Image 1 (spheres, helix red, strand yellow):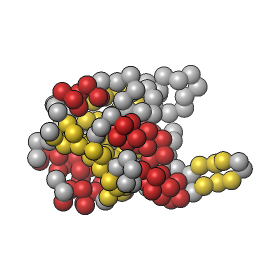
Image 2 (cartoon, rainbow, N blue to C red):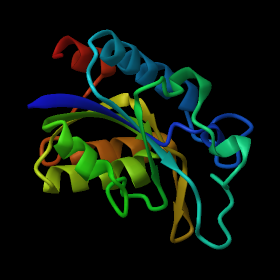
Image 3 (cartoon, rainbow, N blue to C red):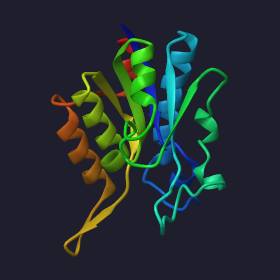
Image 4 (cartoon, rainbow, N blue to C red):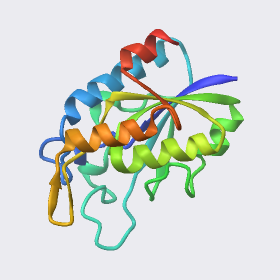
Length: 182
């Protein structure tokens, strides 16, 4: 049984100047990079999830654009698996599950973007598939949302989704706390 790092959609479009800028993306990718460095130093398995838009009318993660590229601070190294996806769930129509089972992974450490969409969906799916999930809340970012004419600020969105995941689907901790548990 092994522990694998899964980094979800840490792509340029989520950063300042990108097509779908998130709140605190730069601090989140810094924490994700700390996890990545630690996993590299320990020679533990690493998976980079890379979203490429296929949906008609998509406005970000467009194929062949700089915005769709993985952020330079967490760019994959040789031997690290890149899993391309086209849906929020990183397991849907990808090879992620097969690859994790091939290395006998039972525990996942997860960081990424957007907390309320791809991170939430992937963590819930991973838990349903039997993985023990740990989520680095400070290695994730989201954005303000609108519903029924009301605005929900990114901090509130982040807290609500993390609270919903914690305990039932994942252990939600800081990147440093998760590193101390490796």
